[in-house]
Length: 290
Image (cartoon, rainbow, N blue to C red):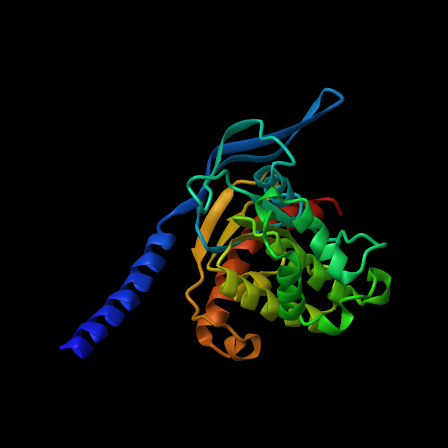
């Protein structure tokens, strides 16, 4: 009888993990309602994006994909609190209902302090985060240095490291700071293809371990399909929500294996068709100019 009770207890725990996972899938951490952004300069107004409506689930990997100039980065900066929308509503829910939601951001450039080592670049943000008071900062720094594979380079300065290594530090620093939401604005755009592929795998590994909500801006269709749970496709300028596509591919994902799947090719083709529609007006305009 005691063994039966123990087995039932274990099953209940396993079921609770499934239930909790499903609950998180239904918790909307970011809600955007009729959000618009207009820039004003010298009596001229430029609409970056308009009337955006979408929600992002807690723990979701959400990609924003669209042509150049459609307002992707402006939208991301609005979510980060670096810009203010002209109209509409933006709601950010904390993972902990008793605290205000926190947002971290990784930019295209790594943004490291050149006079600080790998270790100190990661530690600096932690020292200035009130939520890290009474935490073992050395243990946190060491954990993330190990996660991004830079243990042998912990005391190197940024100028002594490759571009891929510097961006790994930026990713480690952002996750170590434990934001509820992590925003990434084309963080791998300046890296070579081989390094970019390696960092895709690293990013997914850390995201799956830490279960953070991640919003990732990209121009790269294959990057979006490989990384995301869902992809928001924006129209050409001014940006609107053209479609939101669910990526129905299994996790964990390995790029070379995934590319062989017909489902992967179908999703790439679906997104490519949506973006091609947005590029057509530019092609016709170019033809008319000759």
